[in-house]
Image (cartoon, rainbow, N blue to C red; front, side):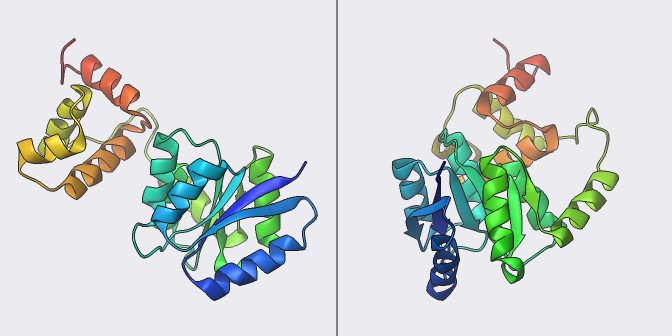
Length: 212
């Protein structure tokens, strides 16, 4: 079976190099390319690729937010994050946002092909230095049942989200920017270990933050 791949990378020369590598792989087909987050989101939803190779640093939106938006939009594409950084903060945030693999640009090539094949098969793949960062993060992580406490503003945002209020209206009510609302939303999901608005709503009702 051919694995359909979308490349989202803002540096043209890097994108061309990646395409050149992948076009030589018999079971991989590059079905689209994008140089920014907006085009990447549009093509991801239009082309429905099997795998998206997604650069973390994009000019208009970072890869972490792109991955989260794809997940929220219902995309089933597997994501391989591509970055010059192996810092565990980038790794864990990408994983939380839905990435199944993470490859450093210095290792891109045959390793990227392995990552694409692995995630397409429902597995995870991380560069060796990335795997080390993940192990360190897991060892330092609190027990799964110990949810981090929400700040007052985060509880306000959670209550409004659970009431079905959209981000622009939340921003107006709380006198903050829409971007700040989205930051609070991501932090809330990270702290609570939740992934969807439905899960947030159930949590808010269970904790008495909002009533039925």
